[in-house]
Image (cartoon, rainbow, N blue to C red; front, side, top):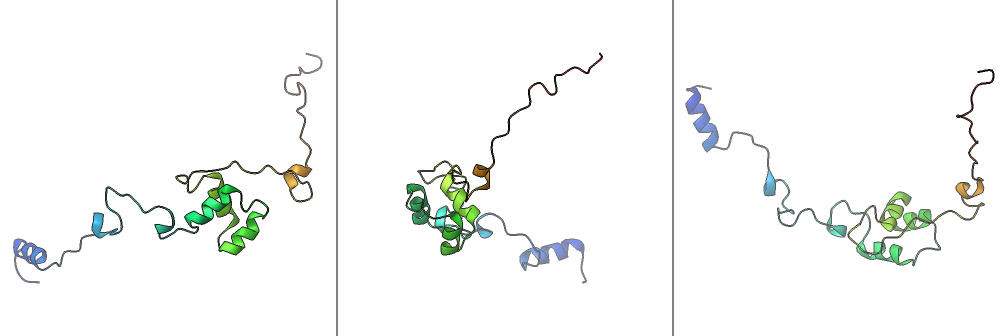
Length: 129
């Protein structure tokens, strides 16, 4: 390309030949500084709707395992659990504590007996000393 450096720079700036990464509102047009990222089902990566999260937290689906709800709504069981306990969708009121396993036939954690701590196993002195 012929010309001096200053002439080439001027040409690049006037003809939009200089590549600049998009920033701010040009990069993410759905977001402005005052609004932040879209919440809930308005977010492009949302898997659940607000109505589904409220139904989970209200206890309307307590009789169904997470795997059944996940298959019904097309999400993972972890997404159901996280939404119900408030780890995700924390701004929606009504988060509940996780259900403790009670049925030993359905939950491995309930079938295992609690381990008893050995008394003084680390504090014992060695014999002969």
